[in-house]
Each structure stands twice: as structure tokens, then as C-alpha cells.
Length: 97
Image 1 (cartoon, one colour):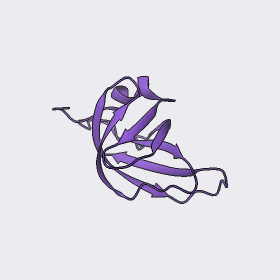
Image 2 (cartoon, helix red, strand yellow; image 1 turned 120 degrees about the vertical axis):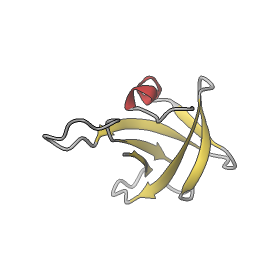
Image 3 (cartoon, one colour; image 1 turned 90 degrees about the vertical axis):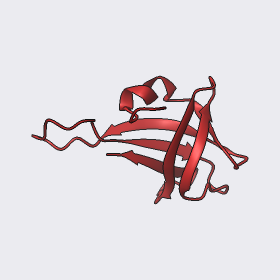
């Protein structure tokens, strides 16, 4: 990508698996959350967060990764594991603001 990512760029990939360069596992894009503050306008891009789900015991370390979706689309972003109360998965986030 040569422009700043927008949440619309990821919308077609919700539910798809993402593979990350240098890691053997994959994560499923679960949701896109809007981070727009109420009453704030005029931002160059709408802030958003990608939420991924992965297996509980196989953790992708925090960092900047290239990733490929199931359909071959490439992205690069900073991703980190987050506190996950659910016992059946590990959740991750990638924040764009």
C-alpha cells in the first residue's frame, strides 16, 4: 500500500485468515472497530482498530509484520497480543489512528 490504510481496505477481509511473514501460524480478522471520537470531524482518516483471533497456545509476538490474506492481498502493520479473557483463543489488535 502506498497510502494510509482505511477501514474500508480491510472490510472485505473480515472472517479471512491472515498469514504473517516469519511466523508459521495464522490469525482470523474478527472485527473492525471505529475509534472515532464523538463530535470530532475533519480528520484526514478515520481511526480504527483491527481485532484478530488466534489459537490460545501459539502467540504471535508484538511487532511490525507483512501479512497476506487468503485471497493474496498484502498489508503491513504493527500488531500486538491483547488481554483475552476467553479461554479458547488469543486476541490481537492493530491500531490505525
